[in-house]
Amino acid sequence: GVIRIAGDVKPGVAQDTEAVDEYLPRPLETAALLAALMRVVSGSAGTAPGAAEPQAESAEPAGDLRILVAEDNRVNQAVAMQMLRKLGHPADLAADGREAVDACIDGEYDLVFMDVQMPRMDGVEATREIMARIPEPERPTIVALTANVMEEDRQRYLEVGMMDVLGKPVSMKGFREAILRWGDRRRRIGGEADEPDREQA
Image 1 (cartoon, one colour):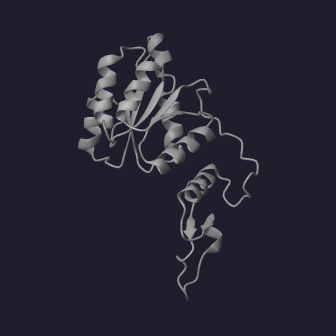
Image 2: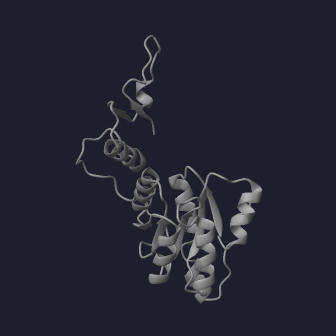
Image 3: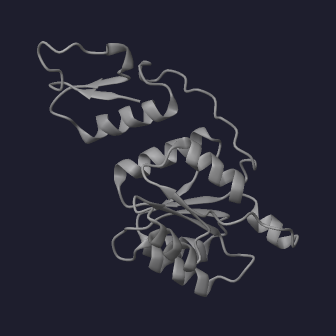
C-alpha cells in the first residue's frame, strides 16, 4: 500500500494517483498515521471511517491459537496486531523483552513473535530466559522479528531457541506462513509427532 503525505507531490511531475491508497495532511499526526497504516494493511484503504471491515482471512490452525507479539515500536505494534487480526488470530502485546518473559510465564502461549531489538531486555535474552524457565511442552514457539537477516544473525537466533526468523518489515504472508508452520507445534510435541524443519537461510 502507498500512503502519500501532503507536500510530497512535486510540481510538474506526473503522479500515479491510482497507486496511492491514502492521503494524509500536514502536520502529520501519529493517530492519523496509525489509522491509515491499519486501513492499508487490512485492505480497507480509501473506505470511509466506520465502514465495514473485510472478513478475516483464515489461517489454519483455527482461532484458539494463543499468540503474543513482543514489539516496542508503536507503529509496528499496530500493524502486526492488525495483520494477525485479519488472519483470524487476535494477539496479546508485550512492549519489551521483560514483559514478554512475564507474559509467557503467566500465560500459555502457543506462538510468540519476538522483536530482536527492544529496551530493558532484548529478544535474544528474553528467549534465553523463556527457554530456561518454561519446560517443554508448555514452552511457546518463538519466531524472531528482525531487520538483521544475515546468515550469522539467523544462526544466532536459532541457537538461543528461536524456531524461525521473519525479516522486517513483516508481511501478512510472512505471518500466515509462520502460523501454518508453527501454530500447532505444541500439539505435535504432545503427540510426539515430527515437527517441521527450522527455517534456514
